[in-house]
Length: 315
Image (tube, rainbow, N blue to C red):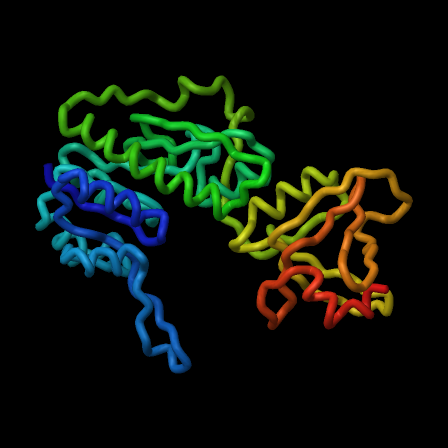
């Protein structure tokens, strides 16, 4: 079975490695075009998948447009029986319908829940205690095709998006190998996702996350804020503008917090600090203790390190 693999970020590397180590015949790689970097934007930055493909001598295509005739001709020339997509772009039908055995996708959620671009982030933000990975056949609507296999894992109370990403990457690699083995053996029973829910209102989505999405709303419970921060850590990172006693604004990225449940009479968003060791922000049912932050133009640091240079503003 000839396989074409499509992906771009780190999440896609471990599954590709697992396929090669499992003896599957990967005949080519499709990934995003190189990004320009450096002072003059002339140095190409390769995607993690491209780096891995080059190290293992795999042919690579990097189309700007997935409907481009030259790309479609080159893709067809590889003669794939199956295409595998892991963290790539939305494919046009000309691409996903090309192989005789179809195109499958590895998705970082328990579909049909958390369809969309950011399933790991939203599952944590919403306080889920369980997540997983799914393989399914691609079709017209995003993340809605027939399910092949799933595997579950718990989300620990101390997990953040980074740790869940790394666990799901390993779990997903294992599931993908199992999925391809079933397809190769002709032993696949795919199920409609509609079997797993009764109405659309039961589903939670995972839309792409932008900077405004990441601003912390302190007028919530401590659990909600705590989950919001860890669901966006370490990337793209939750942020807030904290007002000093003098009325100045500090914009901070927030990576790690702790919730302190207590009664208080402060307005939500109010800052309580000794100027040396702690920086607490009031929420509905207590305080969020900031632990790891990053001020604009600075590196990530502990709150105590931040207060060594800025504590006077918060006393």
